[in-house]
Image 1 (tube, helix red, strand yellow):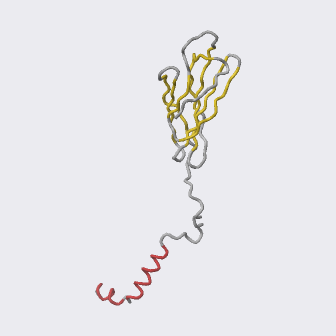
Image 2 (cartoon, one colour; image 1 turned 90 degrees about the horizontal axis):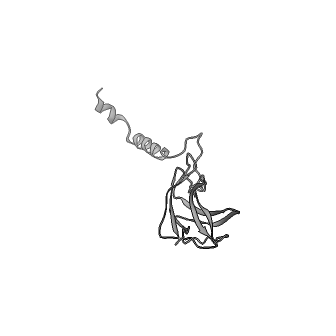
Image 3 (cartoon, one colour; image 1 turned 180 degrees about the vertical axis):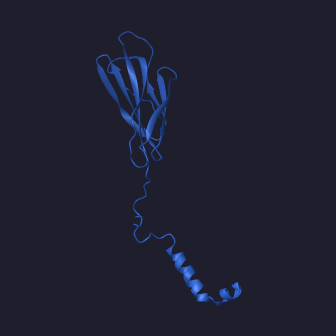
Length: 158
């Protein structure tokens, strides 16, 4: 019997039924497998995000800036920046600023005047990813800032 005769003898409806069964089964969970729920749209990350401050510098006195970055976790990221002024007799915290900005501005004057004290400005960054996982806290220091204690710490971010 030749190949052509075998193929001709297979009923057409059997071929169509087999193809339809295969088409319907594709993409469905197997018998021992759970179907994905429609409410779970999150992406699983292998690790929490990591925050880093990659550059800090002085612009025009008294403006300073830092640039942060994020890695790991699941983008998009939210950047939370905060400051702490470390005075000889204690610390004054500046409120956090949260958003998508990777560049942060603050104030650290170097203009000396009578009646002012020296302090260190700490700039801190944490990152939150799309799954609300929170990173480590990255920190940069600006030493030798001058001002009156307590400094109002008025960030000048846009």
